[in-house]
Image (cartoon, rainbow, N blue to C red):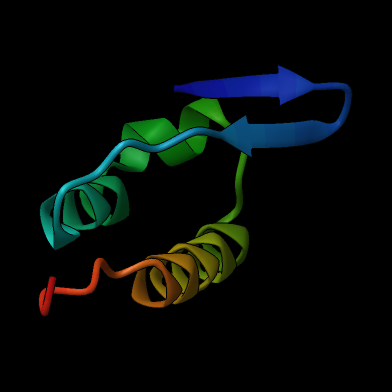
Length: 61
């Protein structure tokens, strides 16, 4: 879910793999609807990748 809070864009993403991230990366309409420039979108993608890599579930359970 994507929502705007003042000037901040809040993204709440449920994902089970990199598939969701890939879909986000490729969804140019999404970036346009959020009024992001290409540079901002790339920065956001990098941030998302960082968060996802930090939150990878531990498969050894």
